[in-house]
Length: 485
Ligand code: ADP
Ligand code: GLC
Image (cartoon, rainbow, N blue to C red):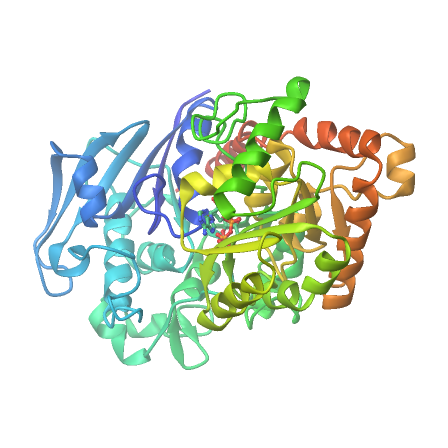
């Protein structure tokens, strides 16, 4: 089979820049796709952390005037990643969070910062760098959403396009006055173009104009076609249903593997489950919880936001108290939720602890040391932490939405009788149903033999990238075969 060349375009890439699952996915897909005969180059903004990762880059292209400054495309390898960094100091030469300034607010020029990324992608998609002719430009989330638009409204042959939605809640909407500055023609400001309720919608543009649309789970691909979860874009997504599909995320085996994880006090696998106990002890010690191996220990690794249902969890804490269970919360996000969880922990010393912050290493310990991981999300395009939980033998307790519904099998009575079930799944999402799910988890905990069986099944769930990568490769090949440039 002819190898395919793909340009993946995103605002985050693990391990260099990450604020959530987007970075993980963009960082892991290239290695997985290499096994499928797909060569991926990843285009990201040249943030300081990205430039530092490619200290001796090749300068492959110049964009002398890109929204108020000179820019260059730099190529280099960082680990397994074949990177293209858009070096534009006037847009990206700012340390810290990729979207927010030091005051915690969006950078005022984000419209231009991410239009620039898309512009560079489109030039590459039109063959600007002779040594690299991508067959496909694959845009991730709103930050790359204008790439299909720049390709569509430009001239000459160009690569096919795929738009992947990681989260429909973030859409990138900017004033329509920007149109000329972006270099888009007047006719682009139309319902079948970049126009979105009188503004310019970056994600909307990608959804309207890409050749194919994917999202990160089959269930979310259906949900976003409904008014309830379509976030204003469901009408468009219904018309584009023939080219819309869902491909589940995986997790990177080289980062998330309990048998080899250097961040754990004790490595383990499904055949050496007793070794897991050392991680639970370490987690209890680290968070100042009572050192009780018999207490059911719930974990949370999450953004503390409405999407993740963290307000519901806060309301449901009495169910955890009733079960005499323990809880560790590792997360950051909305200030009121951060305060609420910190205060709740102060009232439950030795039984509950909250750590506000973002700590990659500690996330591994929570996965390896907790008995169950709580994810009461109101919507969840895919979710990665439940996949980590499955692999690390922490039973996921999840709302039946999006990717959570697609990856966790409820251990109800009939499932258990049929030797199935990998976690606890509840719906609809509410405080009450979450409390019931916590009660069910506590009941299961009382029968260690059954718990152990569910845990072993969870750990053998296929959560890697091999299967999803085959699906992306098939999609790319189908696109190139049926819709040639
Ligand atoms: P989302 O991208 O919506 O936040 P995902 O489940 O797809 O949700 O991805 C979240 C990623 O961020 C996972 O890799 C998870 O381990 C990580 N993560 C989330 N919160 C924290 C935190 N407070 N500390 C460390 N890692 C975190
Ligand atoms: C988004 C979603 C999350 C998904 C991640 C990676 O951040 O909220 O569900 O797993 O993207 O695709």
